[in-house]
Image (cartoon, rainbow, N blue to C red; front, side):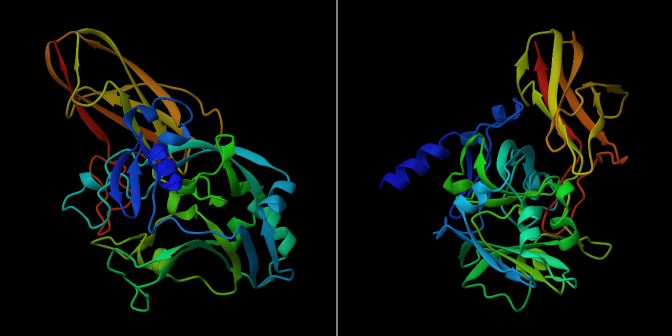
Length: 359
């Protein structure tokens, strides 16, 4: 009973999408600050909350297989990084025709401070084999999968959540991939992967496996339901591609969509982020097809999280007005006008359009 009560309290501020498995968006106000409070951080789950024995096995094609505990991870050099995590299905509801999958709106994105050991340090201790290709991450969460599986070999009655990264990326200290055990200075909560999870900067959050229980180095590319089945861009006009880094995106956080405001100077504010960032420019448009105006964009204060932007709008004309925000990143990627439609509804980074009424 106490566990249920604690979960209910932890989830009280969120906008529930699905009670089982539990999925919930952050409240709109959670995008206002630099760091999202733990209780307002969105939650993505594929299965029910799992039991965990507190052990992390590291094996496969390695010279030194090992089993680590939370104390073992805490004894290693600790690293703290602020990281924006976005669900790959964020914005799915805005795609047409509506894809299959959880009906996410626009608030499956949050930024927290994560503390943990570097994955690269753990792999260095394990000594991967020279012919290693991928690193496989298995979570303790498993069960009957609520969506139609894509791979014919999938056991839909008892499926575990498993993802993989290329060994070259996983073992690179510069990638700063964490085996995290703290979130915003406190131990991980149940919804966010306690006792430890992977945090993969720049990538959609599907790569950041929660409730981590096993890491294996593989000598063949990994295939699995959550790697090469789901979490693939199934395009209508070209071959499928894996879901990996976050696409460039800007959000308007103030004024609120559909709000009524008094005429006069209004400072439009928002957040912008990109997996191939940093974001180098945000533009705002006040019509459906007119001129774009450069917003003030804060420089990145750290490499892995969103940036603030602002634009002063002289809202002197009474009536309904549209606002659009468009981000560009350092790699030259620019948000598209139309969502990049794919069958499972991933990676929607289309330009946001809201309206406000000026009175």
